[in-house]
Image (cartoon, rainbow, N blue to C red):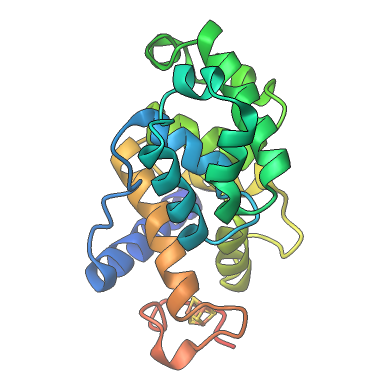
Length: 221
Ligand code: SF4
C-alpha cells in the first residue's frame, strides 16, 4: 500500500473521531470508581445491556463485595444474588470468581507493570475472559493502548466500507492499531463514541439522514 493511502486512512479515521467528539462530547469512559470495578463491569456486560450491569454493580457495592478479596471470601450464593440483574448469573458468578482467583496471583498493580502482550495472554487464560473483555480490562483498567472492538464497531466500520462485513475481531482491531497512534485517551474515547453512534444513528436500521457522519460516510444506506 502506498504512503499516500496509509496517510489518507489515518486522516479519515481521525476525522471520524473528531466529528463524533464534536457531536457527542468527550465521554470520559469507563464509568467506575476503581480499576477493579472496571474489570467486574467488563465481565458482567457480556451479553447484556449496561443498565442491567449498573444494577448488579450497585448491589455488589451495597453488599461490600467490590474487591477481589471480598468476593472470594463471600459465599458464592451471595455473589450470585448480587449480580442477578446482569443475567447469566450462574455463569458470570463462576467467571467473576475465576477472575478474582487470578487477581490473587496477578494483582492489578503488577499487571499494570507487565507488558501489554503478556498481560493480554494472562487475561485470556482466565475462563470467562474473551478478547473483548480482556481488551476492555487492558484499556480501561490498566491503561494499555489496546483498541476495544465490539459488535457496534463491526457494524459501523463494515457499513462505512473500512472492513468487510465478515471481518473478525483481530482484523478489525488491527485496522485501528495500524491507523491510529497508540494513544490510550484516544482509544478509550473513540470506543465510547462508537457506542454513542451505534445507539443514536447507526443502529441496526441506520438513520443516515440524522447521522453526524453523513458528510463523510461513504456508505449511506
Ligand atoms: S451515515 Fe448511515 S451508515 Fe454511515 S455511519 Fe451514519 S448511520 Fe451509519
